[in-house]
Amino acid sequence: MEKNKIHKLTLLALMIALDVILSPVMRIEGMAPMSSVMNIVAGVLLGPVYGTLMAFVCGLVRMTMLGIPPLALTGAVFGAFFAGVFYRIGKRLIWSMIGEIIGTGIIGSLLSYPVMIWFTGSRSELYWLIYTPRFIGATLIGSVIAWIVLVKLQETAIFKRWQRLFFNERMLG
Image 1 (cartoon, rainbow, N blue to C red):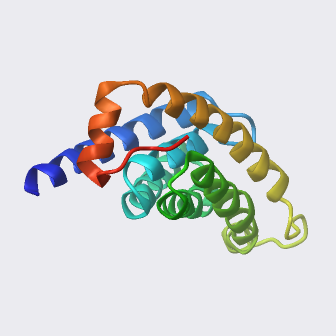
Image 2: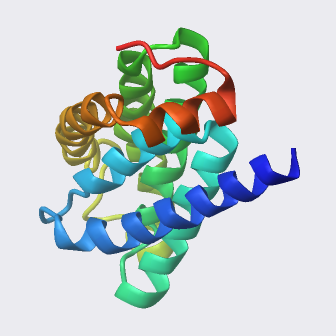
Image 3: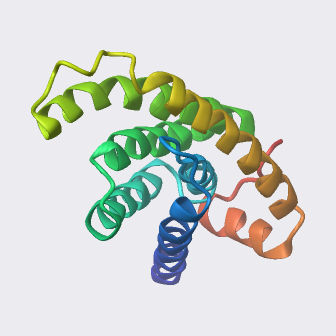
């Protein structure tokens, strides 16, 4: 059991590093599709708790090191959580993708409005749905990329080992 936890923490650290590096590199103004990719991969491999922890740490790193506003947290954290929860419920990759779209694209985008009102101190230029189109766009792009990545990963021995090690289940397309 201790070895399993060490493997899971190692994979968590790897996922954090990949998210921090890839998100700013493959960024579209106002959109972070690689964050959605990492949320879905983390939801499938690590589950909702570790996936949410990954998104939280990545958001903090991006805010402090890259000057990204709190949107880095409001978007990613809910998406990672729901990607993991929906995958556990549905046991299919499509459910993780739907969880990411609901968590980041809808819940995260709507919660970003009051957070940014607080952060900027200005209400005049913002409205409730200002972030929703970009967040949903990013989650759709990220979901497609995550699907491609996970379908290819599913063919590798290390991925199958991770799935057995962490969940004793096989990923179903």
